[in-house]
Image 1 (cartoon, rainbow, N blue to C red):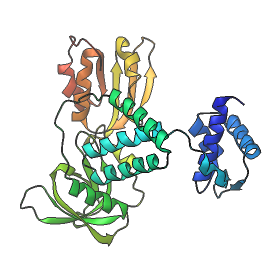
Image 2 (cartoon, helix red, strand yellow; image 1 turned 60 degrees about the horizontal axis):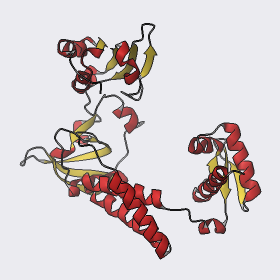
Image 3 (cartoon, one colour; image 1 turned 120 degrees about the vertical axis):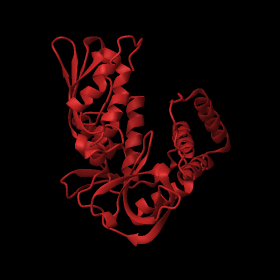
Image 4 (cartoon, rainbow, N blue to C red; image 1 turned 45 degrees about the vertical axis):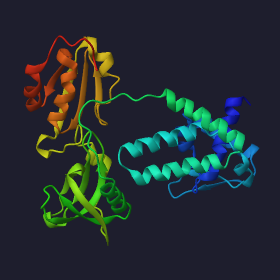
Length: 327
């Protein structure tokens, strides 16, 4: 067995031991980026090498493998990557005002270090710091909304329930309102997705930077039937929702920009159609023409809006031929 295959087998054993329901062939294929047949061979090797391997067929008719082997706890791979990831995630959470998450990530990082021998801990911490020092971040232009940590903590607590939120929104003298949070959309401007019972069943967006105060109440509620935050977010190009603008969007990228445009994911539902003349057609369904305009302007005259007509009229007169580079 090669070194890489041995490493994969150990990792598979740890995953099978850590997951309460075990791990299926489909999950192995996804985790290790291998074919279904290779995943089968890996489970065969798992049963050969490790004791305490069991399998069970679930209600979904998928077989899952579990490993109940206390010796796996003694297998301690080097922790540099995990510590780097926790540190990066912690710094990101801190910069976004998610103080509770930053503190929890810091505790996890310290817990990993504490389980290592002193010499290994020093080496791991030094290696991780070297990588983090060498990783810079690109400054993104534009305003940066600072979210109040107390407000964000209340939102997270309410989403965990889910519990209703009492908040003051908008003007300083605005009355308190009760809402039922369904999710949080994070972007250049973040929105709390919620239902306000006093206004009916419609799902609404609340700008988080305009929430002056928030308190999670000890009142649970039922989420809107069939609601999916991913599907809801996919209705817009950015974060702004406008049902009146929702529909099919078609862009045509010129041949000289086609290969670059093909590298972008403009929308989760996009369909790319390479044309005989070398151009590229991009199709998806979404709303938010203004946010689309902000992005399309960067492409100058290398993109043409085919549909909808409202978006085309916003972009067409501002397509410039003198941009020296593509996004």
